[in-house]
Length: 565
Image (cartoon, rainbow, N blue to C red; front, top):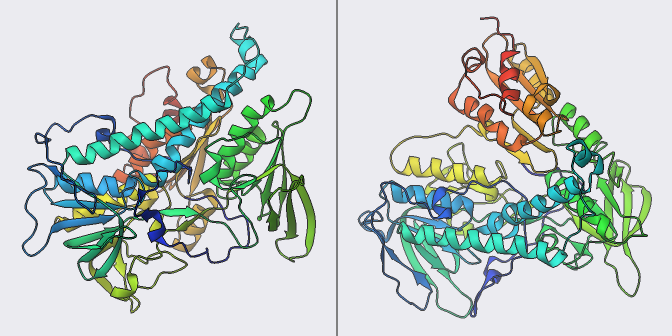
């Protein structure tokens, strides 16, 4: 789930994928790219599967920078092919697919033209969570009333900007290295270069200035991810007008920053900037301004949860907003002049206002990174840059026919732009190419926004559920429970929060769960797993939860539901 688009969207500027790999090797820039929870497997942190074969290093230095790892599990490929499976893109989705493929006994290679880990590890969910961890601690230490309620006295809290930035950078580097080593240890061949489709079951890869290498595979997965979407009229200079790629470097904390877009990305950065902004200057005010195209902030959230979150996350903080407007033009600061943002009415397109700020963060979503994939060689046409796929992630050509042995996962297909969704899609594809049919239920995939407090959700919002109910002819019910009734939340002095369940009273089917409160991102998984497994409320309400824990918020939620049958 991506942040809601907050500007008039035009087709993203073409991005040449070959730009990522040069004769001097891939760029190791740590510019952050997206803010997303990711599904990194245990192997990333150095834990081996119990059934892992013994790793025998066998690294060959080739001109094409091919890294080979000998492992009996990555065995002989299908007759007539170099590999059973080749994956283009070594982000979280590609990584999850590669490791699962090795477990299934498939000879597997993964091609990466940038850095292993993709958006999530290098430019997104991993470094962003490092910054949010800092902002959470700063926010707590700065809250004198909160500290006094515990009987604590804390001197004025401060931070070292470069130290905070280093924490994020070091975490990304550590996870990237662990992820690379996990694939080597399990026998995945890591091929460095930009990959593209040559034809049916054929892939080429290489770097600028070198001869391409052509390989064959029984099955191919496209997992190239996405890049920040910068709408027409916005000039990004990487210093005063930035995307999330630049923001997570935390090169400076601006006095007044406008955030264009109030979805996940914008909200998380507002949390960081408002927590750190008090250190900008003692005698000068700090300000965050949201610019949102729709008539309300946080348009992608369940309305009731969004309303509560706005009351807690936005209204009491140094944040103001302009809603129902597009940022039609943004000019970077130069020659002593501030960043200039020209706003127009989202409906009439008439000029509305002009803002002068120190910096602007463009948080309007993501664009698929699919140019240069060679899709024309197999008669595939993208749709707004996204690769069309069916429910099994198999690629669909321009004639509406399935392309044999070709799949696309993650942000590149646009079904659900979350790192852990990409990983789940990749595992699902591997199940299929291994001979077991598998269709992923995307309604069971949770999402989270790591503000303080957090927001999480799975399934349908209440308006979506009511629309579905009206169309299909059934009733829905809604029940809620408050964190104020939870002992653990009160012990933490964090009673501000709400959990909401949307369900069918006739069958007990869970349609959606939304949580705002302490550790909401961790609590949502009981609900997402219930949806994935088809567990009904009349069954899950008998589950036992330890006391006193935050998990009892969900326990009370399920117990309060009234099922007819």
